[in-house]
Length: 195
Image (tube, helix red, strand yellow):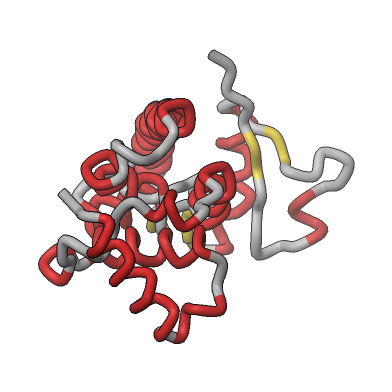
């Protein structure tokens, strides 16, 4: 466990670094991110009871959401900051992460379904980013935030892809326009999921 003296050392070190001009909440987030990526470099005094230094935990949580790093940092937050972070904020972080995991599973299943649909119709596509990248980089499909599915395919297949999506319950992203005439090389479509 960290001591108050080692915490003072961390604060002093932070003030000497290039990040010293950043708010303490951002400095703490940067430390947690670094320790999450390079755990072997983390020392006992790297992350500690910075609440004594006036951490605004709501702001800390806002920064985590803004930078979309919750899946990466939550395990370390639970391990290192549980004694000092307000229980209500920690609970909100955990609930947000559970919702993210649920959404990620749903979007992954939808991606599999779409890829099967394209394969059955002889349309070659490549998935960009999303669950495959998260799995490769973080070892988990929930390792990074995602909000959509990005596919890359041949522009010659766009008309057929558009029809497949419309027949599958999707709609154009700009329903007041004919998406294919606006930009013949891209197609933005949406499907609302209700649970």
